[in-house]
Amino acid sequence: MNTQRTTGLLGPLMAPPQLPARTGRIPAVDLARGIAVALMILSHGVIGLLEFDDLSAWGQIPVQLITKFASSTFIMVFGIALAVAFMPRVGTADWPRLRLKLWINALIVFFWYKVLTVAEMLYLSQPADIVDTLLYRNFPSFVEILGFYAIALLWVPLLLPLWVRLPLIVRLLSPVALAGLHMWAAANWSFGDNQQLRAIFVEDPDYYTWGQFARGPLILLGLLIGEALLHHRETLMRRWRLASGLLVISALLFIAFVVQAGSDLAADIEAVARNQGKHPPELFFMLFSMGGAFLILGLSIGGGKLLSKVLLPFTIIGSNALQAFIFHIVVIFIGFRYLLGYWQDVEYEFALMLTLGLIVATAIWIRLVGWIQQHR
Image 1 (cartoon, rainbow, N blue to C red):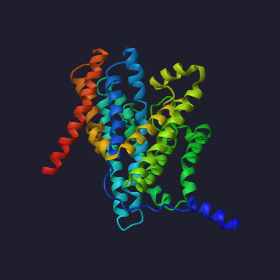
Image 2: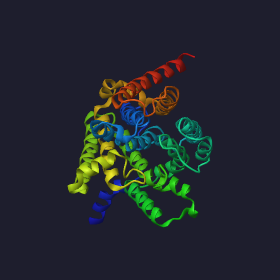
Image 3: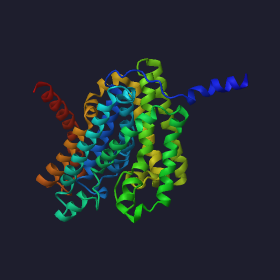
């Protein structure tokens, strides 16, 4: 009898996922992604024109501080979107086509990564430096996240067929296992003394990169949240239960950040605002950034369709994140820096107003592109 009871308790943990059928886009996912992109634009728009020390005190904290939620949210939503859009169709007759689609998307993202690298570096860099960066002898900073996604889109389609067969307990422990692999690899692998290769996988202090092992756990967390969202999205109480769980995790992460900081809380907050501990990732930065990510996800999922309509500009931005990324990089680095000569030649308040306007313009641009595609 004891064995049967144990088996009954462990059964759900040992079972692979039983996923409901996919039913189209989930507005809450677009909203969370859109908020992440908007925060990214808020950071890029100001820091793309000014040095951090040129920002006003309130511009540094809290404005730039809250933009640190963007990266973790963006990567986790990447995992959520994969779970929602692709996991239910893994193993079906449609899967080979969808897998190919993901790999084609990897090539598209890689293409724009290189194009936008030139756009970012055009105004301040020499041609030889741009070529070195295009050939992976160096890395950009503002557009490097696209390099991360291009590589992730190559291995994620290979992971998903295995993921849907894994027991729940293995899936739950996988982010911890990958984080452990990252720490071990960062401490022990030489990567053939190739510093650039090391930067791509585990990150390196000399390069502003997003390591596959370093940030991969966030993708796996997103897969888990996306799987839960597939089960809970249709029932209001179940959706709120999921949202409440995410908000509790957010609160615990922020509490852990405060405890870890101790008497140096103000110093750690300023360090986070200045991107210290972001590359390679350090505990105090990740506690804060992931706390914000879970907060955004919890509020977006809890708010559902209603909040997505109330915050429609963000939802529109999140509906086409790549287009939003391309548009804001081109406007900042070609328009503001190169054509208008605003680099270090504007006041913070002006740069902030430009950036807020850019967020609105990005939503309008995406809606316009969508309208053109529908009517051509």
